[in-house]
Amino acid sequence: MNQKKLATAAVELFDRLSAAWWIPALLMRLFVGYFFMETGWGKIHSLDSFATRFAQWGIPHPAFNAALSAYTEFLGGALTILGLGMRFVSIPMIINMIVAILTVKLKNVSGLNDFVELDEPLYALAFVWLFFSGAGWLSIDGLLRQFVDTAISRDRSTIRSAAHFVQAR
Image 1 (cartoon, rainbow, N blue to C red):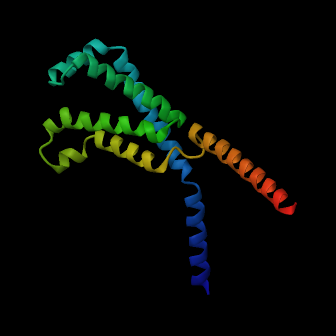
Image 2 (tube, helix red, strand yellow):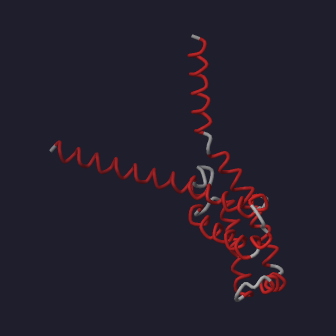
Image 3 (cartoon, one colour):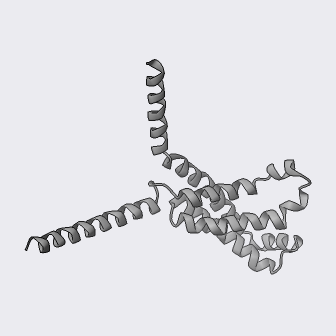
């Protein structure tokens, strides 16, 4: 009997934890978003030296690509913190990390151990997770979804009551 109560308690605990999935989404958004907003801000304010590094790395059109990368990080970080367009924002952030890995970081990787010690794959994975999980309810995306769901529910109930009225006649 005690095992059944223990199993039931465990299931209830896991259900409660599943209902709180928005907490790791919020923490991930705040941490990763702040990091990219801060690094993007620094790159925006030193675009000339950032473009010079791009040229040294052999990246084509260094001034354009440096600005693109810096503004992607800054705006992507800010939107990530807010949780606005999270699934859309994740795509350029993932691409930015993949480009960084392939054009700069991979040159210094001699094996799996070196690769897993890079920060960029972890940031890319964070955005992959945010892409699939969404921003959570405590975000602008979450608030917009609640607003839209409420409007849709209201419209459906209006349509149902109108249909019921027509059927009653």
